[in-house]
Every structure is written in structure tokens, then in C-alpha cells.
Length: 252
Image (cartoon, rainbow, N blue to C red; front, side, top):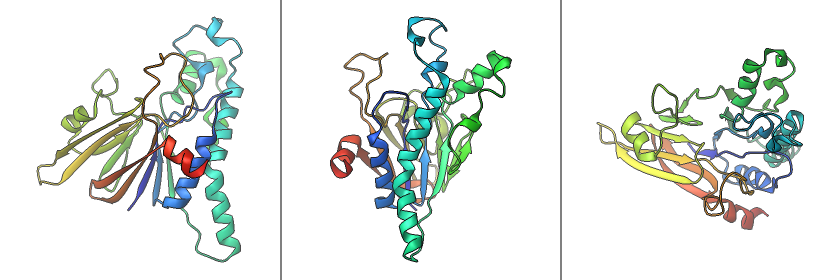
């Protein structure tokens, strides 16, 4: 089994999205059995709880524009796959249909929080606005287990629900192979189960081209790319990382 993981894509208005087409072409080329999007596809800057409504940060930021940006990004991501499937149907070849899994991130969860904090928004702001019809969608922090590997936007470290800080801590805490997003960059740690089988923990939380305004220039220089797990069986795999720079050269 091969699983391709897409870390946080952070779609929002006025940022480049060509890398999503590159990811779509990689799906068609590498033909994973499963594609797991680790969440935070819709960035939702208009729903940020870190800044007060009416502040300078919110000037020009609108919910519907955030929704449209993410929906456009999803169309770009899946367009190469849908084009390949159409061509396969027309030529009467077997149609490649990977299992698509989408994990809601904390940025998608901003929508739920906004409605909870202001019940008047119920029905006006809804997950139905998000173009996830092609995916099996899982709620924020609802883990998914595929062939012995756990996937989640992040794995909480305790009762407070904060993310486990490092890949090595995930190995120590969970004792199984896991992949999660949320944190920028890339971390990998290895361990062994009691039966001697190897386990791997991967944190990869960035697949986008833009720099984040809240980060300084050095902090923005983190690894960005896709994660491919080859030979997945009972929690073991051979990991392969495809950087956004490599994908740009290959597909751009």
C-alpha cells in the first residue's frame, strides 16, 4: 500500500496556489492507494481568534472570500486526478480511484468556534460551504487509522488538548506509527514496538508557497512538501519526502 499525505495547505485570498496543481499531478504520477489531507486547507483568516474583530488585522478580511479561496484550491488540487479519470473512462481503461481522506484542522475548526461564540451565525456559516464532496471527512482531532498508521491534524499531549511538541514525544507517548500536520517544517522519529517492529512518527505541517505574516523571515524558512509512505504494512513504511521545490521543478 502507498499513502500520500498532504500537509497544511493554508489557502486564503491573494496567495499563490500553483503548488496545489503540482500535488494533484503527483497524485496521478505516484498513484497512491490513499490520499490523506492533514487539514488546515481553509486558512480562515477572517475567523482568527488571535485578533479582535474591527482591528487593523481584520480590515478587508471576509468569510466568503476565505471559503472561495479554499474551494478554488481544492479544485486545483483535484483537477489533474479528475482529468486523468475522464481520459481513462473515454479510453475504456481502468479508472484510478484513490481513497481520499480529509482531516479537519484547527483552522477549519475556527468555523465551529465562531458559530458557538455567536449562535446568530448558525445556518449562515456552515461546513456545507466547503468543497469536500470528493473526500471522506473526519472531524477535528478525530484520528484515522490505516494499515496500522494513525493520522490526525495533531495528537494532543494531554487534557488541555495542546499538540504534542515533537516526533520523538509522539513515539514515546503513542507507541505506534503516526503522521500529523499543524507544525511547520518536518520532524521524523523512529522507535520499536514490543514485538520488534519499527514505528515512525512524522510531523509535517506545511505545503504552501507563501510566507506567513506572523512569522519572521527566519521562521518562514521551514521545509514544505508532501509525504509519501511506501510499502505500508502493519504500521511500517518507507517514507519519501517530496519538497515543494522539487515538485515545482517537476510539474511547474
